[in-house]
Amino acid sequence: MDMHIVLSVLAEMRRFRQRDHWTRQQLESYQADGLRSLRDYTYAHSPFYQQFHQGLTDAPLQELPVLTKATMMEHFDDLVTDRAIRLEEVKAHMRALTGDERFLGRYWVNATSGSSGHPGIFLFNRAEWITVLGSFARAREWGGVKLDLTHRVKTATVASTSAFHMSTRVNATAHSWWMPEIRLAASEPLESIIQQLNAWQPEVLIAYASMARILADEQLAGRLFNQYAATECGSLAAECEHHRGMHLMEDLMIFEVVDQDNRPVPPGVYGDKLLITVLGSRTQPLIRYELSDSVRLWPDPCPSGHSFRLVDDIQGRVEDVLSFPGVAGGVVNVHPLVFSRIMDTLPVSGWQVIQEADSLHVLLSGVHGEFGDEMLADSLQHALREQGAIVPRVEVQRVDSIPKTAAGKAPLIKSNLRQAGIQSSGTRDSRKV
Ligand SMILES: [Zn+2]
Image 1 (cartoon, helix red, strand yellow):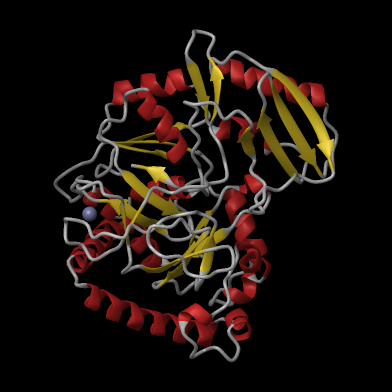
Image 2 (image 1 turned 135 degrees about the horizontal axis):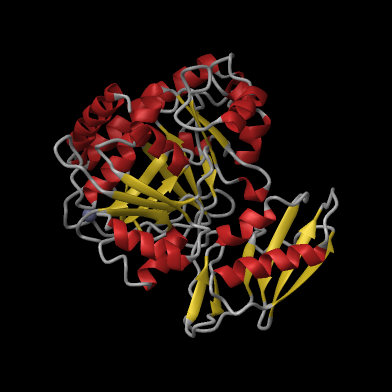
């Protein structure tokens, strides 16, 4: 553990704390200055944005085009502001990643889940990475967990264990006497996760939102508070002690809740997307970057007096937790990772797992390698058996393309059972802490 990083994160948190009590006016003036310097830097150093915002360099933020993950990845080498960064070399670095290594000795690399076939890749320089770490620490602090050099926080993380996922990367930097932690794979059987958590007795539990929901069902999560995080920028929002929703970290980002056509949606109404402008992003500037999360702004202020606006919990994420009857009775909730760790190894361009009343229906598109459908069905059944579920019939079907929903999404996992009591929630990089 690099002690300099710890001290820098603590210094960053002191800066954050000062802003926590800003008035709305102070906040907005800070955002305006931050946006101007982000745009000036970006236009000077990113060939992509010079084109993308051509003729709009002085236009209001709301008139700029929206940046999707696909566009960002397609123009990656021109979008970043350091001409030494090449996507192919970043990918090679990711394949070799085991711990806290940096690309070119100076960039921390994070990627979103590759299970959709198109991972987003994000680079952070030292200052940017300290802001990411600080944002997670701040989320914990808002939730009542004081983080400083005199208080060690015993943490447990239940998440993906891939080296380039943000939860792993944050941990690789932060792991120390300061945050003693165990890490458990969300794809492990629930029974074993619970045994290990009981033995460790963490003060803080970090998990995918869907996994946290499952654990809450198991009566383990009495002290959980909510945090909303994304690989693109770290923590975006977190609950304070009043639990009225999550406060957006508006000193770090400008948020726009919009509909399908990128028009603003008023407080009290769920948007289709959230656009974020990350004020501190310099290596890989994110201006009006699209997150497919549906959030709702809370119209009322929080009793805490924070001027950071509140959002509801996040809706409409892409993956479902499926519930199956358990061998030992009751219901077994199965995390999406149980499926994706099998499905992601297949030579296919798309897949979808659909739960029907008496079976599991698996769709595969763009198959470009040899494997047996029988063997796939066996692996899925084996994985479900390990979770303690009564194993359903599995039907594998090869299709031309995965059907999209009306909203244009192709969820990896969905349930056609909508009986009362079955909860679904997402795993997009949101988590409960
Ligand atoms: Zn509050």
